[in-house]
Amino acid sequence: MRRNDKQEALTHIDAQNRPRMVDVGSKVVTARCAIAQVIVRFPAKVARSLRAGGMRAKKGPVLDTAIIAGTLAVKRTHELIPFCHPLAIERCDFAIEFVSDSELAIRCEVAVSHKTGVEMEALTGASVAALTVYDMCKALSHEIVIADLRLVEKSGGKRLVRKGKVIA
Image (cartoon, rainbow, N blue to C red; front, side, top):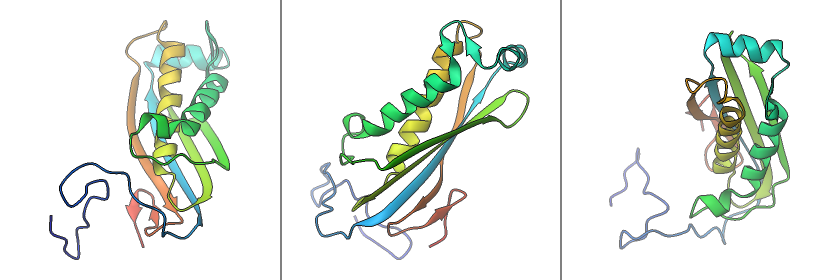
């Protein structure tokens, strides 16, 4: 694989095109943070019902359960994604709110001081929180949609990402 100014080589592929874990041994420890977001879209009737009921379903408190599941997923990302390094997570926060009548935004922010970033942890946390919302609410409808999972922000490594775009 050739490198040019606009394209970097894939870091999880070695010179023989075999998969590998990135060697972070010579990297400097820095404060790293990542924010990921996902949208859960409910049918209008389901959204109204959930909002009226304080976001509780037959299985219990939807948002609290999603936060717990998402946090567990953040801490176990290295067990799910083959080349992620195990990290001692220093901070994991969730913000969950309706951004329209029927769309729930779930944001997961993860921070660590380490030699590698936490993008995958934030993305995993947001996605598992969304899956948990789906699981908690599927008795109401199977038309719930999980959409638009994305990295919103990342700092502390080679690249600075804001609003999903590399800016440095």
